[in-house]
Image 1 (tube, rainbow, N blue to C red):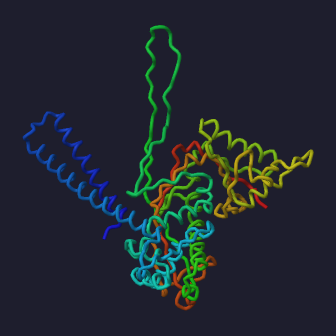
Image 2: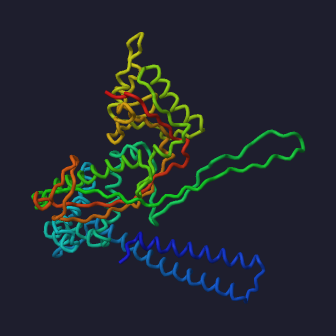
Image 3: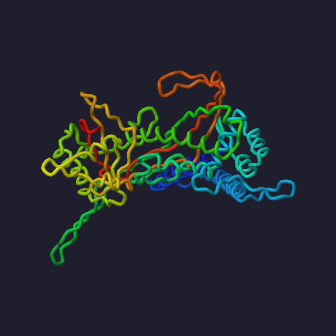
Length: 437
């Protein structure tokens, strides 16, 4: 069974085929090919076939969207009947408990070894009828179950403050068909003064296309089986937070330093133009200050809107900058870092995913600046989960851990996204020597 995004992809493929056929027909007509020729007849037949495929796919998409909307309404309303009584859904109203519904779903799937029907029954038995109703409408995916879009979107929203690039103001846009194309303006139209009755010089902007396609992020979350024997909101919160933690760390690494190799996104480091990237920057106060102001200037001088500008760096780098003092007066160079977490008037986001052991001396780190309103994250807005109580995994220390031997259940979460700036000149950065404490 295809899920909603699969159906949308099939519909888009049919639409693309229609376009190709229509272009072929136009080319034949422009070449004055006879309307009753075999070439025209074949092209028209191909167009009609693609059109029929599109209409069939569109019907399926519309039906699937209607079902998804209905399931979301049932999951949120609490109108499910249970013995003639209205069941109160297990949806926390405390903002701190946002996303626990997804946590309950993940835990139930883990307890039932990935069997959706058993997970639905388990949730129902424990009084979580609204959650079970939402999960019952979920679609099976290859090797797992797709968490319904409403609950997946909550988790993705909760990722925003945890992922430095998302938290800095990058725009998240849905990519339901698995790809997104937008234009980057290479050069703008020009304007100029002319004399009386003198023809204006024509000009037009130059655009380059940027294609975003899904990159699959897989995260492993070990959950203690003793924890899974309970179905409380607190337990669901722990599962949710563990899932968010591992996803956030890996996203930060990809969105900042990804090189596009091995089906990974291209991160900020590899989008920054060469002219906007500085290297070998020393740690003396004068050099530091000149470098930081240069990074801001490179973006501002590119006529970027500066809608949501900001910095991304390691926490140790932020604290190093906060410790710098004027040589003559001893006054902190950047007091706003301590008072308001701002540097040169722009907010700072920190992440441990930026290394501090780069360069020949193994003591270099990176600092990024940009208008993150220009950065786009295309997201599938869904998460697929699967489980295993027999598999093994490698922990942060490089040790292989057996889930069975340690009474654990491994949950694998898959999300799909990509990143690209609308204008790469909106980004700048530097590799800096000993900018750390």
